[in-house]
Length: 110
Image 1 (tube, rainbow, N blue to C red):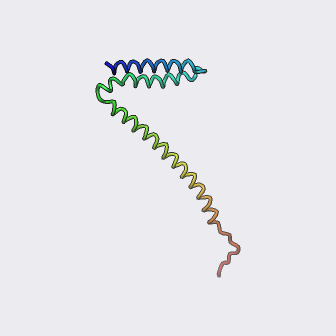
Image 2: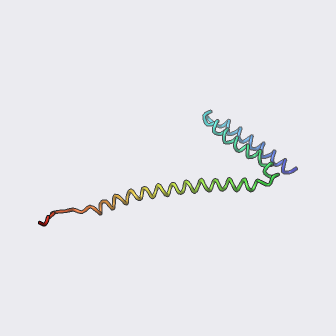
Image 3: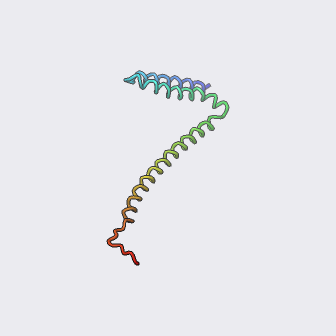
């Protein structure tokens, strides 16, 4: 019974918080994004008791954490590739400058 009471209390606090944020926004153009995000969070809050009953809460959290880790690693790898490409561009300029040889005179033997 305590879990149900806590769940209802969490929902009430969340809904009050979201409505306060929506009222505090100066422009209506941001409200659609806040409503979308808050709707996703509300779905997760509503699913929490069901996930607890089926013992899937831990697997759900671990999957979310795995996806976050994958996204972070992908962005990290992209940053590394960009830095490597920038580094390669600088190295080719330096190597071209080093490879330039000045020729003063050419003799052709007969």
